[in-house]
Length: 487
Image (cartoon, rainbow, N blue to C red; front, side, top):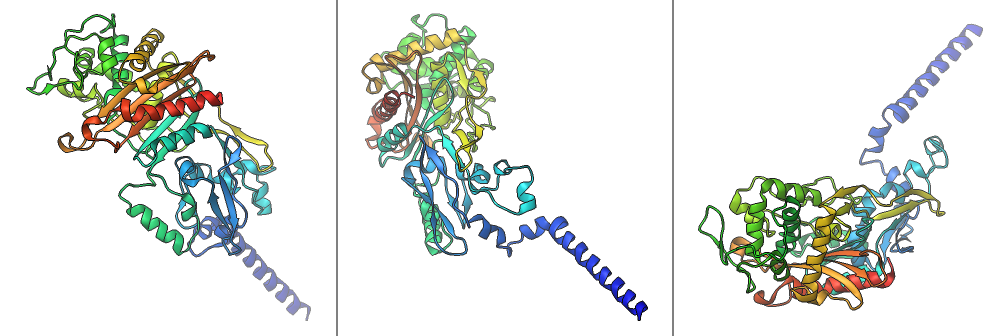
């Protein structure tokens, strides 16, 4: 009898061992396979079983969570969704996450290990932390001024603090309400199809994900390159530029949209935006020096994160002299995001140095304790400090007596540069209206804001479209909002 009991005990022990081995195989060695299996809804149910943390603007949440009472219990909600969509992105049970909702997903959903009270605590307890919050650098007054300034016109605005790189406004129009995508039912699917079928592409973040020919706003880069290289030493000396100017090695003649450009000085040409002078100046400066300066400003950098990726702005380094002439006035293959052109203006305002842009001021636990802090990033030199002084002088001239008068702010020092970029087959498309600028309040020791505005479909006849007439008033409104708020 004892022998039979012993055998049964050994057999039971073997069965228990086999069960433990299988449990370890499932829970340890094949855990990722089971977690990633589409049929496993446990992670999704746990993910949406608690409210998501919030994205904050000036300490105020612009996101929220709604209790649906279903298996996927909490859906994302958005306050003033279209206004902040280029910042928040969306968090959808059906279509995933984008922008800050994506890059900060671990913190917002509570899965970030940094939220755990002790290392590996959640791995042992199988618990989930409350979602943390993301505090942005956005100035709500500047954001609203940019959004209302564009109104129903297609385009984008980016504004930064030149001395820190803090992004103060990031607007893209047309926009959309991210809340319509939050659920997983028919409403979300219909909204997804409608938004993706819209030819105006409302889900495209034009401020950071779309590049445009910058047109004459790129003359800021060209002038800085020429000054740094010593090609220009006297801003008031006649340049000897003919009008029209024949592109090197071709019979193509480049003309101007304004009069008085023949033999104009750099100061006159910058004030009234003479294409011929800057095309010729780019050729005289040469591909090497033009490329070096463009790189200093951030062109051709594919690794910009704010923290979500920013499209690469481009300056073609393989151009011949004729192509270089066109590239130097922001045409040919030269392309830039609005955020990149805001950084160009910021470099001028900040003495020739660029602070890398950033959008997240800090992240916190649900109770308010700091998880991580943002703050100014690395500094890169775009031009010599002496060149920046002269560029500020030139940009002030544009606003005070040139094509950018509509950006002037009473009691403030404002510098700017207009641009009207041709595009389309044979330049047949409606021109893009650009304006880049910076502003310094009367009591400020240094400029407080740099802005770039692009309007894709200006509400005017083709002949009347200009950065000074269409984009400059929007930039002025944004700069005024920042100066008033004291950022």
